[in-house]
Length: 405
Image (cartoon, rainbow, N blue to C red; front, top):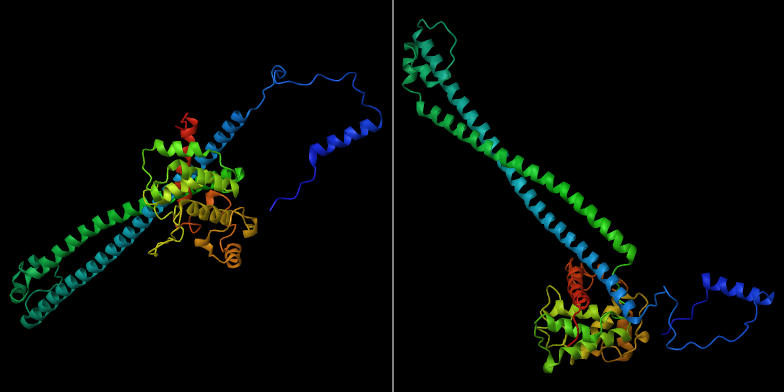
């Protein structure tokens, strides 16, 4: 559906008004003589740069490269943040285990000390009984702290015979071992707590960097899904050949033909076919598993056992392009598409197919590649960065002088 014509606004409008007023007031002098017609040999005024198709394309490529690289760097930092979160979760689990171990050792120490006190109390009670029975000349308060105290005097002769001297020594050894164990556990706990604090600080810094870079990319609008391809089909195919990968396509379809399908189908629907090709490279492992013509994992999911099979390579490309259009354009409707809806994805009944396309639940949720993934097309939160990483290599190949063969 063509867009309605836009009214003249801004500077152009003001210039037009001034010109009309000047003509009405006779302020514009009639030309003295007709100027000679410009020819192809007429040179532009000195010092004036005339943009060419080549320079404009080069500038657009460089701008695209800068935006894509900034997005990739953002996703690398997000990947670092995800790694940090996994490390932090591991440290938190180990810290909880260390704290539990310290608490268990403390409980064992309390138990051992209580048992030692019980043994000592038993010794004191026995010594008191001996004292009462013999009414000797002890004349002192009983205080039994060590086994050696029992054998120090003859007043405790009867008690020494019944005391398990080894029990006190054993418990004291147990306490010493537990104290050493606790010291080691406490050192581990402190180390993990310090590591957790450092990770928390690093996370704050990384999150701030993510937010800053995201704001910069948002200000530029992100990498759009819709639009005309920057790379030509020949450039796309030349890049793929430079990777040394061998595409395994139905009926040995040449990669040049597939690249042309992506750029042509994409431009017709105003979807970036060059980036869609990069997405297909990611999804199919450089077209190493693409004989089903499903180049974008359509219908695949973490718990699924199968995905859509398309009859021809062009059908697979068209389905991918149309689905990208639906993700990117909140106002997309079947009637606006230049090509018929893919029958495999939407069904053969035109009315039902249009209804399926028009009622797509994710319609308009991803106008830019930056928000692809994490539920949009794929579950991988770093999906967009992976797609754009491949596209960045395609742009770099062109910028470095890589030419179609």
